[in-house]
Length: 271
Image (cartoon, rainbow, N blue to C red; front, side, top):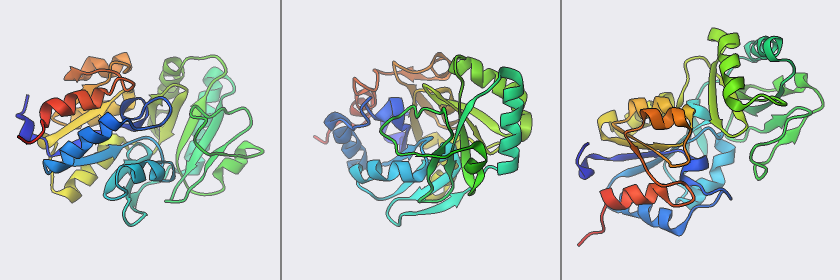
């Protein structure tokens, strides 16, 4: 394990990791991140949420700096409130991919995150938002999901588990898109080859930092590429077994300030 002072970039997922179940940040977590900043290191949010759904949380964290959003498909500058980089999922390919999944498992319910710093989340009839606090616009039919460029598609199935749906989707979709599982009720299709590591690498390059100086925290299989890229990956106690299997360390749960537990050890207060 690298010396504590070696970590110059702290990459954290949000849902199930830095955030508590009610979408809030604990005072202990905020204090731990303040220690990181005081030591000269950078905190970087790396999340599946699209940029518009991250903006209010970034304000709680200071409202400046970079954030990796949309499962790595967006690099957002919070201070300037603009996307520095983004890649979209071809809408025709997305529709084809959905058809291939439904050919295997029957009807699924879909939603999309539109591209852009002000893009909307659109949900078709039958789709239930896994995070009821996040805003979404219901459309009348699936064709309406493709009205504007999108960064990803979210899928739900009436009775298959997330693991089952993700496994079927990977086999059905092939190279049309990358399939990820980012949280309870959240199986996603994103541009082929794009992962959290894609956006994290771009952000680190802009910051002049390297994988060898990066510490990453997460809770779901979509965080595996980020752990592979970083020097040290820390899974939460509530993490999916697939992520725990590749983690260098397991900390307490998000509800028990697992990130703060590690950061307090690595970034002790100045004497």
